[in-house]
Amino acid sequence: MLEATDLTEEDLTPQAYEAARIQIAEDRALAEKEARDSALTTGEVCELLGRQGASIRRLKSAGDLYVLPTSNGRATLFPAWQFVGEQVVPGLRTIIPNFPEHAHPLTIQQFMTEANDELDGRSPVEWLNARRAIETVASLVAELAYE
Image 1 (cartoon, rainbow, N blue to C red):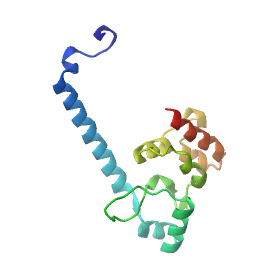
Image 2: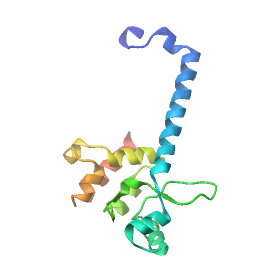
Image 3: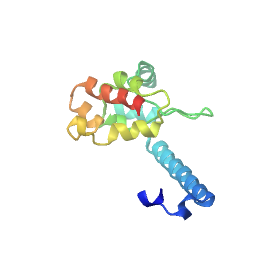
Image 4: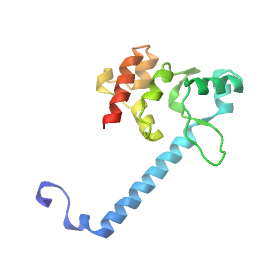
């Protein structure tokens, strides 16, 4: 079996497995911290969009803004990728509900910001900001449920 891979017997030891598990956990924690650190608070979104807090809460409730799940009563955090200039990326109300229920916020961020061949090499954020078809992105999101 090892001949067909670049693994060694040492890579398959319990110690190597544990080291890999720890590295993955550390990488994920770092990525989550970076996502939180780059996210905007409600006050920052108010300032960015020139709106009052109640307006931002309505946008959030309507699904026009995506928020990071939080716990322990922490402030609402809005991932920065959904804002371009002083505007909200259009179409989020249609797209965000299509993500699988179990989708991790980092998966959503990665999907929304990375180039996609199905979108002519644009990221979904770029595609939507160019006022291209929202349904095209929504169908790509729906495909994530099958991965």
